[in-house]
Length: 299
Image (cartoon, rainbow, N blue to C red; front, side, top):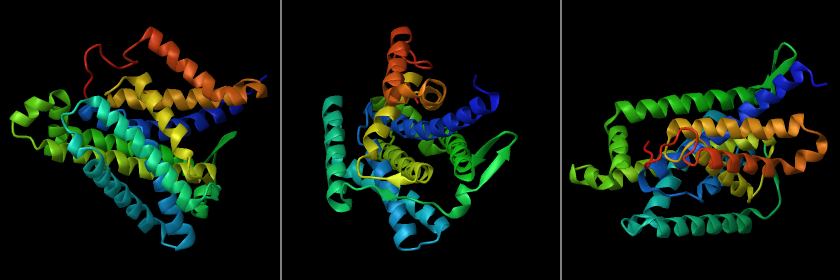
């Protein structure tokens, strides 16, 4: 019989994983809300962010706080290049060219990383204090897990305030509501879209650190399944809904961990299959997602 402390420990692990999925889903939702783009390349920026901070801290001994700031800047710069090179000239040509371009960029980045870093896995380690554990009765939680949960909450709250309290954030909401009407009202659409990409890729890069520190390993292809599951979280929560993307991320993370932790060991290899079964069930019962709307959803 499973003990309460074991269940609580697995629940904490699920919340940690869900926090990372939620951050990635948030980044995807920001872009989708404006461009209606399912951003397949999102996972690649997680991978690039993880390798970037790996080289800064493990090989070049850059102090961690400085490396974390540099990682956020690096993520933002990736967003600038991603939009400028990949999508700016495709404005107004429909959603399909954007989708295909996103998939092509992901394939390019993954294979480029494979050529540069080789297919081998790299041992990833954060500063030692991230691996100290805090006891909470019969369960414990590592500092990296606390950092991940706290970071996800801070980023979501900060982004919500950004959307509601700043001119750029209000412009993003207006653009998500009706892009052409926003353009006619004098909103700089290119600036709004660029901001969305910068925010999304910066969050993805920061999540790359959290992922590497949590699982102590990174490799060139970690972005694929991470990106797919982030998209699943977005669909579960409701396309275009910020709150829905967060909810979907936590549901996905908790379901995945409890699948491994509570079911017999033989079911562990099927964790991804069970997760996608959950997606199918939700789509059959709530086609627009848990917090989505029947009409086009907005950020």
